[in-house]
Image (cartoon, rainbow, N blue to C red; front, side, top):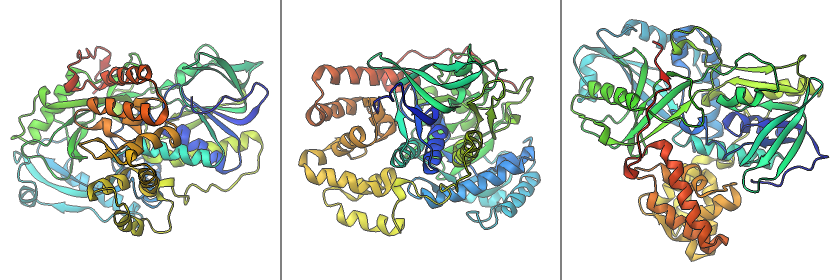
Length: 553
């Protein structure tokens, strides 16, 4: 747990359930507008849906297909704001959209949609899309299948390679503004009296101690788990209809592109991606109805075969097999429940702030939401919270407030200057620190200069140093070794998932943080256990059956 719990007699304005990107964004916005806030999560920040996203900051192009112009406009605006407030984490990301004979979406229709998108994005775009002939595509992407190729479009979007770091920075900034975040603290129930919700009952996962957090307003921002929070205490129809999305991570393959390819799958006409990511490639994602255990979501063999088959079709030289899959990532999108839907792609990707009053006063539930628009969702939720609490409407500052890693007058000048001052680090190490921490790379440097042992490399592949491990625990609310490897330093998302590095990092914690060898061994074992959901090739773990997946299109 990252903070002591509030006392039984304490009363805060907001109790937020869920420390994913939406819950943290609400905490940051609300705290910035003067509300007292406590966030509770049974695990680490961003360890659920956020960590299983496609890592793309969509401008909303695909929502034009459903004529959802409101969501397109919101997505364009939020992408634009992220480029300003988190330039160290969010980057330009060109993608090719090829057109093939037999596609369900004809090339002329996509070109028309892109023209409309460019008009909507005027002044907030990243350059206009550009049509390409089949011949031009063959020259630029020579290994792309030419069978039935009719042309394509080069579209400019954005990527956040480390979505986990967005959550960490939202956490840091929310706490700077006065919010408290309790991780590894399970909500065991709502405090409900005479139709009014007064907060939550909690249990510290480590000590087992029960407690209560009382709040004037409780916000259920548990993502796919929102129905579980309400179950048995708040009468409500089903709210979450999230679908399962799986990705696979592979090494560069014969003919691999140097840009993202956004194409239509032959099997089900679903738009999917192949894109470069941190020296490897991501293929995804699926979009399946899922009725299984939300805590046991893994990519099935069928999904992996589907993605590999589509990649091999698009790149005939690839020859990819399941043995090429380094690991997989699967999660549940927090979508609104839509009865009788025949095509999951038609389920809205927008968000709703549901006020349960008058049946249940003092309770809001967040339905839906996506990575790109987390800030806008938080602004809407805080506006509603102020209204419910009867407080004057305060100006939202998050449209212009930089995240901690971009808190400098000139990020690009800082980026250019940092490698010259980072004497212990190689240029590659400096570049990595800037990409992950932004201006907070200075703090890593300060720690490394304060103790030569903290400048020692703990992960040979990335060049990560011991100072990062110490900073993760002391300053970034990491509680477990897995928090450090998978959601702070990100070395655990490498091709071998840092299985051997885990031992080295645990040893750093023994020497620098006072762990005993018993805890170090337990943390390494727990880390390996957490990796099971990724099905990493290197650990040779049992495959998932995927029997709870259901294709709906």
